[in-house]
Amino acid sequence: MNIHEYQAKELLKSYDVLVPSGGVAFNAVQAGRIAEEIGGSAWVVKAQIHAGGRGKAGGVKVVGSVDEVKKAADAMIGNRLITHQTGPEGSLVQRVWIEQASDIKKEFYLGFLIDRGTQRITVVASGEGGVEIEEVARESPEKIIKEVIDPAIGLRDFQCRKVATAIGLKGKLMPQAVKLMKAIYRCMRDKDALQAEINPLAIVASGDEKLIVLDAKFSFDDNALYRQKIITEMRDLAEEDPKEVEASGHGLNYIALDGNIGCIVNGAGLAMASLDAITLHGGRPANFLDVGGGASPEKVTNACRIVLEDPNVKCILVNIFAGINRCDWIAKGLIQACNSLHIKVPLIVRLAGTNVDEGRKILAESDLSFLTAENLDAAAAKAVEIAGKNQL
Image (cartoon, rainbow, N blue to C red; front, side, top):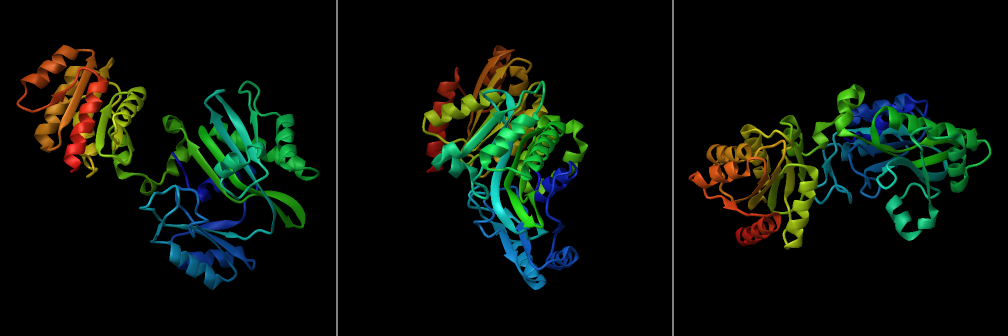
């Protein structure tokens, strides 16, 4: 789960991290009022969507008057912002964040993420801030600093100093950097975050030099939300795919893609294998929907309905390797779905595992035209062939 920038800043503020003064506005009048309350002579107006690259897309404006704050907010709210992370359809801007403009001397990148290789939280930092970190990693990988954190002892002061020194922080900024990094790590650990990204972290020159978080992004472990009430309350369903939201309400996991073959599977590993098999045969998956364990006929019916809400779907590949699940449950669910939803697209079904013979018998004895396959490779090849014909 992701949250908005302003929510990330409020979260960091609760850990004594320095962030600019600001407020969230849902219309131009509110934006102007917030700017007046903040005071100063310059403000930053930022579109609040769950995507990066807002600055290049016009979603971040620095303005010098309250009237300009209102105009910038009015131009953003209610319109779609297209960035390299939103796709061509863009994301609808429903709110903006107004903050006091800072006198920036230098910008840095600071991130905390879970390294799958070491299975530990890792600090990633660079002296090149305010730009896409992917560009820095691609063009100047030597400018990326990494420090792995031992979960048994946590982030140590010497590690913070090592990172700070490597990106060019010294003198009075060193203790600020240590305090900042330890606070972000503590926040990430306490709130079950998968990633915390500060870009940019900046030195501002208002009197004494200070380190301040100018932009922040967090993502959280969905499986831990049951114990993170504060984070759950920050969820903005409008920023998520409606089909993904509906699927989660039925205990299903749905991920939208851009192809034309719907995929209903059980288990993340089988999902990835199914996507790979489709791609290997020259096809493009439209999504994958994981029914998980214990899929009742009703759950399978809901899965089919959600997959078919995508108008690009030309056929559905059902790939089930039953363990806790049962193939006869899946078969009954598919028949129920076809009868109740009047499914017009072909269904290619591959069943294996618990009660596989019963499941295949149920499908064979039905009055419906299921296309069956003995293995994943054959099922994927058949799905790609049918989707290609139906696309014409």
